[in-house]
Image 1 (tube, rainbow, N blue to C red):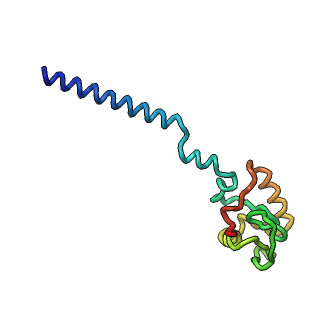
Image 2: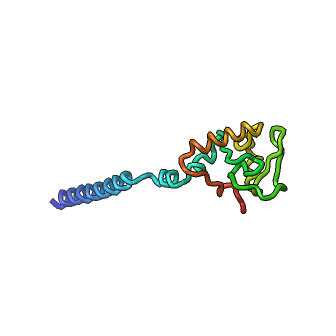
Image 3: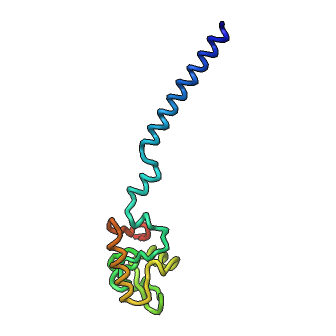
Length: 134
């Protein structure tokens, strides 16, 4: 009799524990995945951070090709595709050095067209804080 009581008690306890755990799992599953929370709250430009597609935001003469910020000094520059391109800070220069085709096109006309296309398809205004070190 005592064995039956212990077995029933054990089964009930395990059942309750299982119901509790499944309920907790369901509650967690019902909420969004934490990774999805981060992706959704991140601006579109940051969500595309590791994309190989063109993401330039400026012309490289008056505005930084990485962030679109106004170029205040002509000392931060690099030559890409036979033209001199200017940057707003060292972080942007480094980003372009790592992957120039992501931010710079061969001609000014191509650059302006590509920037216009990229900015038009980005849902949220691009944020250059991921690159700028100022």
